[in-house]
Length: 203
Image: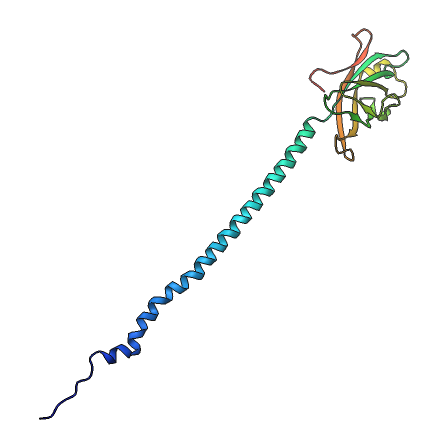
């Protein structure tokens, strides 16, 4: 009788390359997911930091804008009115300027007197005589000045309007200047004594 040797079952299958491929294929997705998750976390961190910097920048800009608006809203404003008209020329009047602010002084005020009307080409703007105005007009106080126009008769004054163009320091930031325009003022001959008054509905 001849005896036949049997090969151990399954040994060839266990060592075949085809049997090892599925195991390697199952491990690959797990290894690839780790760098992807780390990249997403890093991107999210960078995005959060950028958002915080942007929020801080917006807050700083908003704070500066609010401070500037607060200073601007509390800025001193000059208020003008006229004393009686002197004899000789209706333009030869003494004017008063008051600091209408309750917080800041009116500093280094410069005033230009402008006459508007049919005779205005013959009466160019003049710098006001501010020799009686101090360097700082404190809140609520006033000072006097004159407009050195050449002499004019009553008819010229009645056909004209007067404006004041002023310039003064911005509070806190003294290097900056504020411009302010006020008028028109008209000669009121019904007032006793006659004087220049702001027209109704005008500054």
